[in-house]
Image: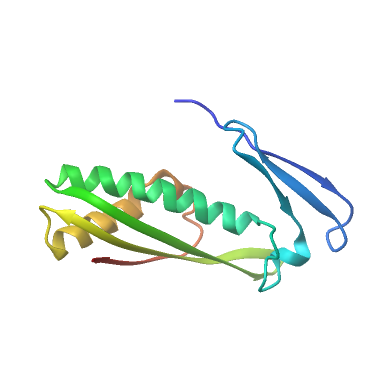
Length: 144
């Protein structure tokens, strides 16, 4: 399996500085980052590590869930996955305080219980979930 790469160029202090994160492997884009906007309610057109983690988690989770639905005998028609990644204070700076995954799906061949089991198993086994074991991850899963 390949290794993927991103890089960030940062200038200045935490409070006054800013940077750009580049998705180097895919060349999909370069995005502005800044701590004041990271800590603000309105991101103002900048991304943050938490948003990037949310994007990584939702895409990984959707892939894992689609595989587990198929293993259980179902066919995923559509999956809508979102993640809310929270940042809060820690004894030394900040930490991720929680990740709330939400998934809604249209699935043929699985009932609500089968979907719920596949959804929970995907939460436990997707590689990004495994990497984030130090953060509480909750799941809200339902069929549409």
